[in-house]
Image 1 (cartoon, rainbow, N blue to C red):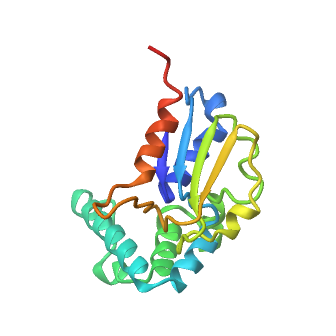
Image 2: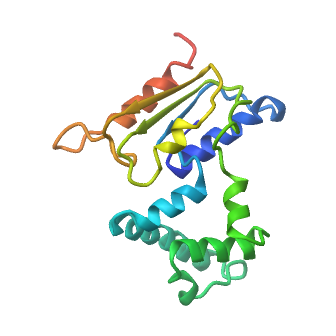
Length: 186
């Protein structure tokens, strides 16, 4: 299983329950995973506006698709979709996920501190020190099991890891190599 950013968070969490749930996960690769959602939200609110614009545009587009496909289930209007990231997250968490506070919602999918110590699937995590969205301090206080490898690149931004002017990325190859190592030899 692999994922980038929030997807990296979502790839790591099933590894905590894989054996109990009968999931045959052999390896996890996560690139710039969101560790502490509350800290990341604060960081995004203070990062260059390009990140807020990019994430809100992508998120708003997916919410518009959901609303068009399932109008009976998704009752949000354009004014709701115009909320800032924290406001929209809070609105959705309260309305659709049953949380009273956005902080409780963030805590529900945090993998900060010692939350991954019970991870029983080998995992590889790639992070960049210069990530403008995921605070690098989240990784300094992380406690990971022995079979988890954290690789830290000095540069890479948020999931970029661009190697050349043609836009070739290191992270895609990195993920393929890590997951490929879990495949049976031919």
